[in-house]
Image (spheres, helix red, strand yellow):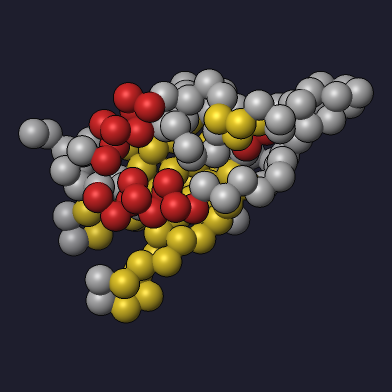
Length: 139
């Protein structure tokens, strides 16, 4: 199978940066989540949007040989505890960077607020080294 370095989709995988206040997981895809788990270490980075209340990112970082930790999380709405879903996906795939890049504010977070850009654009750095891409949320 051909390697896919960057996957762009409109919706997130089920259970990853897809939580809406009161509603729970919303507008995400279980099929996409299962596909990422089965991706055979080919997809390195997944960028998506759709759920504005959950702008944020997850990145895995190697701290020792074969020992990885997660960095990142939700930057706009409440924390949602999706770390276990992210760990499961990243542990079984080659994926090491996932980002919900939606920038607009969300009425479920601030019902009476004016619609606006709720954060600065994210810079995503990519480094190609030793035949593989690495991605991170740059500054």
